[in-house]
Image (tube, rainbow over all chains, first blue to last red):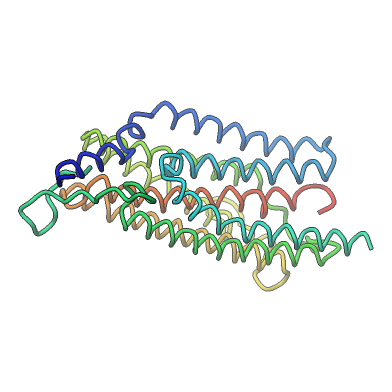
Length: 111
Length: 213
């Protein structure tokens, strides 16, 4: 493979051109993020939702918003699987640790 | 792939050969991602600390402490979300060679960041109306107050650094010293600030305001 081939392969594999053309998806992601934020406020303000369901909904929406930002605005969806794992894998550690702490707190509260 | 002339050289920047595992991600991008992951741990540690302190108390909000302004913070959230959009659109414009549009969008992103910081100063200290400090939420008086200022302050510091980063990149872009690659790295940092805020808005503002908190 010549240097020119390598450069062309790099250019085609860069993922930048398709990403840069996807302005519509950036706007769609923004609309969804705004809508999810409004839903969050609705969950807090409504008062008619069970506490546990509201907590689960708010945590899930926060995770969904963060995932949208990472995938679309930080271009993680265009990266290789290895890079995705490199980034997302370690982030699971604090999430699992936080979950364990919450379960521990809930267990002590019920005891 | 960037065709801009490398600073201090008379030849175009050399494209990084694609890696079998990391594709076309440059060392700069991988380095930025590793930095952001490590930074996410610090935010995660702060939020988990808040969760532990919260779980160990029957009442999270001591008498006399104000409620947090959900609607005001929601407005700040919309501003931050909008800046992530303008930032990524700036990068797309730079890739398309629309330099003026890219510079304008970068400027708008910085302006949004400044608006967020002004909002945070209003929230803490009060500019046009009393702030949380005036209303009795004082650092050190309660776990709620201390964790609130520690977490939002740490995030605000990131926003401030982000605004300076944007201005530095914008200045370099206008002088043709930086290209879309640097704007993309900037975008990773700036959108990370938004990424983290999604959790802070939920865990610091929304969840404690639910009944029974």
